[in-house]
Length: 114
Image 1: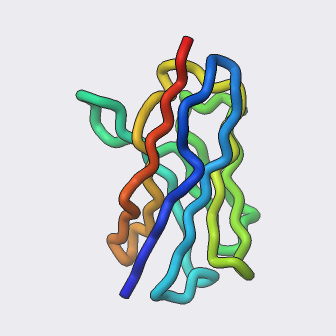
Image 2 (image 1 turned 135 degrees about the vertical axis):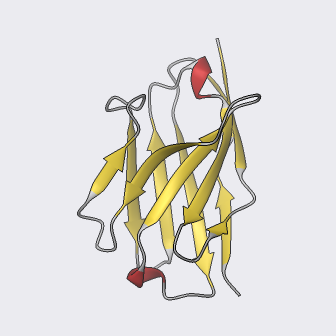
Image 3 (image 1 turned 120 degrees about the vertical axis):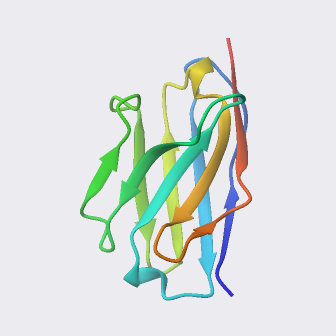
């Protein structure tokens, strides 16, 4: 069955960095684009970043403003989100998503303290 498992979240100070990972299984990872979403308390889930099948095409939410980089390693069935210059408003649960298969991971908590 399709499974997405996120990791790499944690507590970081203002201006710090984190690298999230999402390990995929149960489908041919290299055939599908992948997304990162996030959801803060009391807010709707929003798209953070998208990456194409090959990794050459990426899209980011407006709030990213050059601070995050999405990447993938098709040999490891893994998609990454490198987050730099983190702000308290980045505090949220971050989810990995494959939209066509309607698959979501369990999420990983990111907390940025000021």
